[in-house]
Image 1 (tube, helix red, strand yellow):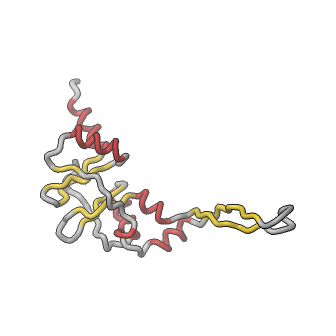
Image 2 (spheres, rainbow, N blue to C red):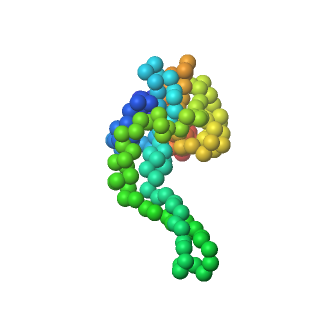
Image 3 (cartoon, rainbow, N blue to C red):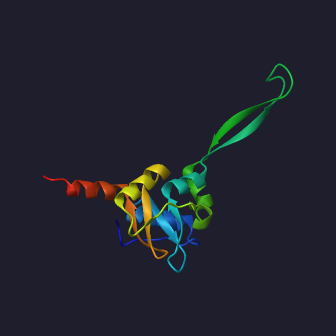
Length: 152
């Protein structure tokens, strides 16, 4: 478990969050209010999802493109990623973060953490003690712990 946790505030911008994720070399961070209480988690996936580099539009087909009546076709349009990120960069983290967060207590077992990770399909779990984030447990942390405990 990582005990020196970098957290985001709900009011931080997505640009700042992306910079922090990149600087720390991690894929997600807890989002906490000023008292340190867990409000959500922001992941790289959340940011990419908000960018919406692809979106669908309907295009109306009219004669002579079709033989009768009016018809519609779905068109997939793509946008440049840099432009899409520029459009969302000033949005607050609170708008994009996952609010339904799986977390474990500081006294939870590794087995419980594994069950939560598998069930919720998450890579990391905030560790909470008395309502405050005290660490983050990743799948990598669990595997490293198993390898350390194996006899040589």
